[in-house]
Image (cartoon, rainbow, N blue to C red; front, side, top):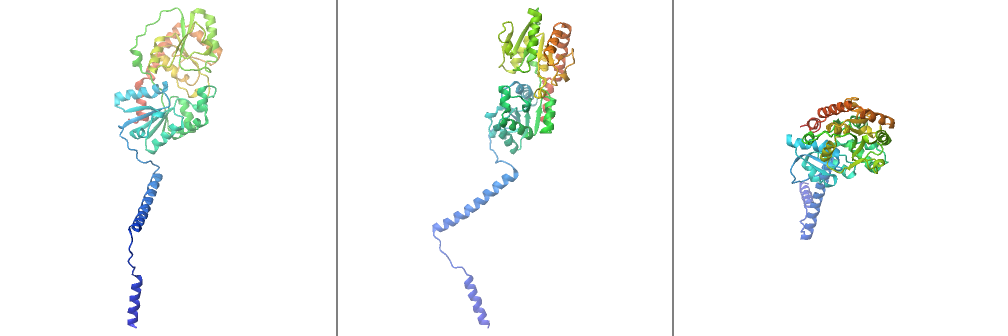
Length: 400
């Protein structure tokens, strides 16, 4: 019985013993290749899963020097200079802030990787939004600077049609929802965005660099004429009630009153020989110097009371006040909080009759014009200095 058990145990061991197999080079290579492919496949899967789970992108190697801020602008326009580049240049001098400014099409992934904070300015193109997404994937701090409400703009001009394009409107909304911080120049625009898209909205107005103006000599012009001027961009619709009012002023006062336009002139005045016009297209610094040289008796700032204009800032009050030009303004949210009637400016309803009577009042009251000239200049220096704007950027956005 014991012998049978030993034999069965021996047979069982023989059955379990694997026979030796001789493999040729092709077979060995095929098996090794299969194992390597299998391991590479699992490794690739683990890498993809890790990227997906962390919502990250592969590390972008860059030899670019590190900077504090990369500014990505939609275009070279005055609001970029006023609201961003002026204070950043000052911060570069006072606090050694390192920044670079690029237009949308000039930006590379490496540039975003090299910066700590990415500041977008008025961007609405889908290609720009992909840069915002990349910035978030690279865990960069993002700021969206916007000074116009493109959702309320009317498609009655080429600019309006551009921003009313459905794709750009949707991209604009994505920027408002996704940027970590929204910076606005007007409180009404800030409220609009907070109630609909993003709670993290910071408001403070733009600045005036008085160094440009204080170094410029300006002599008072001895003249018998009263000069009424406008400086700024195209505002054909906003000028609608002002044009007939100005025509009445010219008819009423004859050669005693003259009109001057800097940057834009309404079509109704283009062919009139007695009206002076100088085109725009200059850098903002040169524009302000030219406005300062104008030394007008009255500066006009028409603005219709529309949803789009509710998002506008008090730009004309800052510019006229800085250049000590007595201003007359439409009675709209952009100007009402800043103007004491007859002291720092003159407010009128946005109608033909109100504009006519307001301009007439200013023409016939030289002491009031002089009072406004002095008070507006003081108010602008107090509230809109470059130093104040720099402090706001440091405290509320850059956290310096």
